Image 1 (tube, protein in one colour):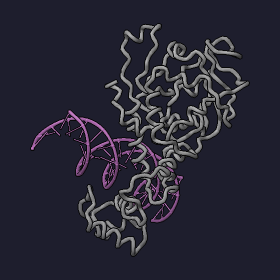
Image 2: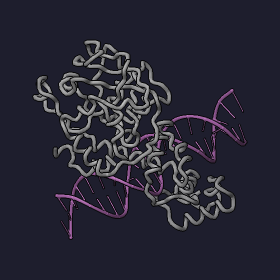
Image 3: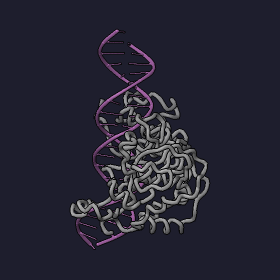
Image 4: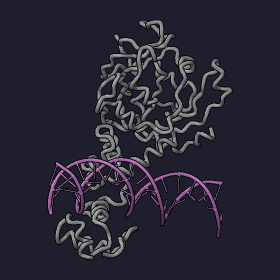
Length: 310
DNA sequence: AACCCCTGCAACCGCCTAATC
DNA sequence: GGATTAGGCGGTTGCAGGGGT
């Protein structure tokens, strides 16, 4: 048996592989090598067929908006089960989906990358911390949010989620991660290294009437695509130190069924007086804001200067 | 023009599981 | 029942091309 060939496939090799599949079907990959047809492993042959030679593949075609949505939704549901996800996307392979997802994650991580806050600024508890990028949920905190430890929850844990899901962010403060819960989704989408977490103090400084709401519905596909111009507006708002004010005075109770809310010590009516979780008797959600996130928001984000330039 | 950086993509690697011996 | 093999899958790597400086 000759040496095993690696590296890019040549057209002649493809032809041999195609002929083999025509004769015997997409199986017996190992026999290709044992018969001396190719000096490739069965694995390599199979991979080449599945990813490049199989009929009806969308080679060289970018993911459509619908496909992107589907990947995001399916990834939220199945996790990194690329092969399974690919079965929902005609013409796409697990490799396609995997590459799409990882490049997207990289892109978002870069977008949301935040520079280190200088120590002098950190030590100054009176100075509000101005974040250079939309803050994110520390996903690992989501599983341990308690009344005693009302972590400064930052939204935007999953940009793709927000971009593509007009529903309010679902944060379920449960003691244990649930399979197929949104929490799992957050865990999987945590951008590494962990993006900076707002400190409690600055959280309070920024938001005198903090209210974060919870719902248990799974992510849903968006039903409308806002205009691109809205993206620009939103990006302007994201860069605004007072950005979080949009979460105050939520006006749209929406269709969710929130059952908990986070109330700061500066909370308003019904506040328990201390920071912490409380039953939400009269939920008001920031739906309207979240719903405003356009599909292409992060495409526009990329057009902004990098955080280091801010 | 040269260099660097980023991105997308193809292919490989390692692990796991099922089938076969 | 254990060992071996093949196939499947997710993670990772390496490279080519494009864009910016």
